[in-house]
Length: 450
Image (cartoon, rainbow, N blue to C red; front, top):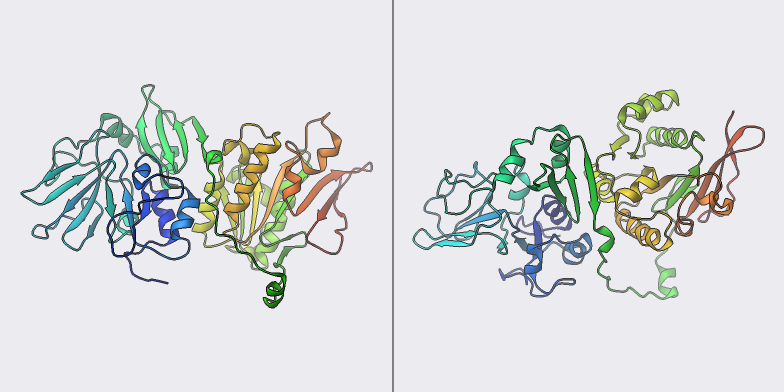
């Protein structure tokens, strides 16, 4: 593993993209020019209008760290100093030292043009320019948004003042919801005529009302197609030599890297069961994350106490993630990376996750199948046991599909465990599971009597 700070690793590339930087690799470790060809783009210039997808980052930086840089978007400015006679003040904006001078990064108006000051050996690089990074951390260690490059700044260049929309957005950064979104990697791309803020985060976009009370989420993730990895063909004889073993069973109905779908009627006890499982596993030393899409922290804590699932032994291993304001898979993945790994993930619930990521019809087998492949691909990075809570269909729906929950029946084909909480004629609630990865059949468990 190359430890040179100028090299970009996959986690570092993901951080740069989360902060709104289009990071791309160079042709090689010596050349300063970017790669001429990319998997989904005709040239590196295509990334001046979009951010790389995670699949593209995985193809470029997944095997090993590489040298690279950023393609500037509209509103991003890099001042390239080709002299060290007058080093810039690094306290004003993110600054890195290059072989011949410095790079300093600012925000500017969307219509700013590339300009050159040949006398002072300074280039003002904006939209469409490629800047090779000598210290990629300089863009991540800077706290908050890039400062606006105004005419009052040192060594000011013409036509680089921020737009009125950007300044208006910056003045309202104290709004609690907007501040929360900015802290999670979202950035303000402008302000609409009706006063709404336009926000972007990777391939997702959102609109936030001027008073911060209404948030509308959008997504284009379903349009992404991952780059195909190089196929690995292994003979059965070779597999036998590898001494492969099955993944550890984190739960008695779900292994690491597997998915369990737990469905049930309202008030059947899905959340209570999940909370007790998380608390028990946290007490055993497993790191558990509860991704909450509908309850909120107050109700979550209340239910923990009501279920008597809180104890000193759980310690810091039970993590709570509020997904109500960013109900997306990428938000969960970024939280799991920030947590340094998770052994057990609970998603509550499937319907809100699907809607938050822009799947238009939960009953469409084609859309749900494609989306679940994205879920499996994204979460494979963490090798966690994943429990997905799901609601049963409404009254009158096809009873044959009730075991797998509401919506598309194709969902039950892709999970390793299909579970159901149901009430029998005596009023007792049972937990029953069909486990495809376990040899022994799972016997029904009595949860409670009504």
